Length: 169
Image 1 (cartoon, one colour):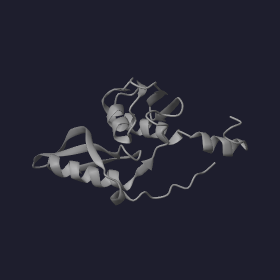
Image 2 (cartoon, rainbow, N blue to C red):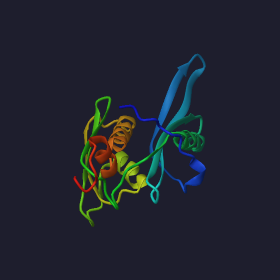
Image 3 (cartoon, rainbow, N blue to C red):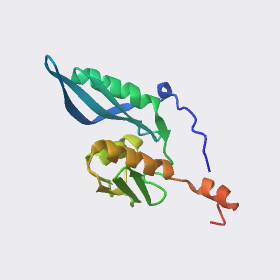
């Protein structure tokens, strides 16, 4: 089942950015050491359930963050949410990083570690239980979280796939 991913226009959303990780990178060259910075950034509009991530590299931190935000705006995804939580439990994988997302009742809040929390709050999820399994690398954790969010289906989609009405389920 291949789904066509339609491009989401970044300008129609009120996107907030959040820096997940900044990494100082050194390249050793003939003349000494070249320092640069790599930034992992998550952007999202909590009101409309749209979220994206990107990474940027530059000689200075602010430029790296700016590049990360530009990159993140280019790959936005729409997340299927039910009110304030997610519709069902899901396990996202990327590399050796795995992220388990569980729906939670009202008033639970976002129970998540650094990288997963950034994605969840940006996506507008208010109540969710998460567990990051395997790799603690923020890049892999963020990508695994996105893998999980893309797998989320709402009742209407599942009903159509199974050839039933929403009431039957």
